[in-house]
Image (cartoon, rainbow, N blue to C red; front, top):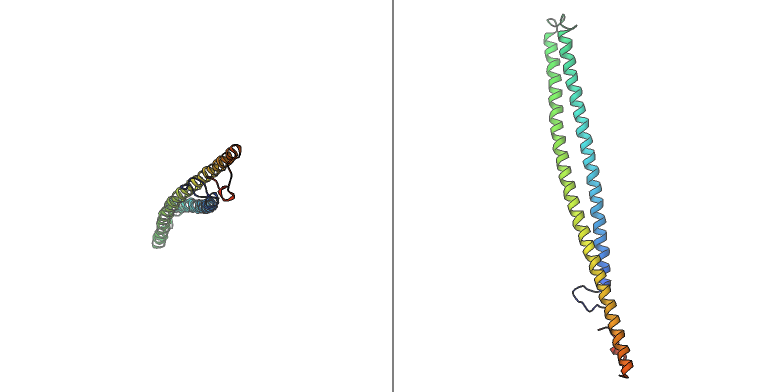
Length: 171
């Protein structure tokens, strides 16, 4: 049965639209949670990489300490080897720092995507809520229409006006 307010649409149509909006809101919510997990993973990788950099820096410090301490006596004999080892330590640290920068960029991208997913989720929730409001208004309008039809019919009966069977549609 249609409402008297055509702008709202029928309650059945609005109920179907509400189910669709609910499904879209749930899908958007799942996307938010998936993106949040991706952000958490990226943040954990950034933290792990920062720990690896600190470990590389500690290796460089220990090596430097060894060169000026107990390893100082053998430095002239192993100077070329020591320089190569020091260069390798520096390269490892540099690679780890560049990887940290890449992981930080990945984290920033994941966080931006999370913000976008959250905005999409909020839009879908607003759309769902708007349809729920329209459905409630449509049902109220239908109830009012039925009530007016019943009052009109009761008034016609009270007056003794004959009622045609096809004229019982809501007004």
